[in-house]
Length: 265
Image (cartoon, rainbow, N blue to C red):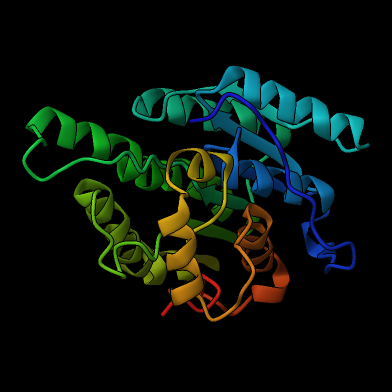
């Protein structure tokens, strides 16, 4: 995860979702990248935002940036989501401060590159501990509160990378492909309590990490060749879809995958 924070500018005339005003939202991996854009987007809607991340400096910088912009300071805590007990304790502590969560965004992920031959059982387990397990156990932690509220929305961040047969991260592909199974596998159970659950699958989003580590001349050509739209995807593009699904505007959307990928072929 990056240690700096920058929220890219976005168009001024975007939708406001009145149903998000005052609602409590919990976001994993909210300190940088797509997560930071999601935190900022909810704060701008007047939601009560909580997030966890391992990046202390980036998280505090984000919180201060939102305060300086006139928004309520988000609740945040340093948390390594590989520690499920710590993650669930953070959810409980944040709920005690902000109230039961109407919205959970399972965003945290790490797309470190690796080869088939290099993967050991310990490395495999560590990849799953970051990219797969936290989503399930965060849902387990927030659902009782959503049931008390009478409704809720869970948004799981997936990926189009594995669907496009992207190379160089087989463990990440395995973990991200399981997100759709998690969404569909819980939709009927949660739906009985009017808790909606959906997947948002980003394309190649130009976060600081992606630009620094992976975007080169060949990558630029790949984007131009594969995207239907010419503009680069930015973190706020993903956040806008998350807002819709979290709001009452998405009241009858559940068990679905929504791709935000500029029409990647």
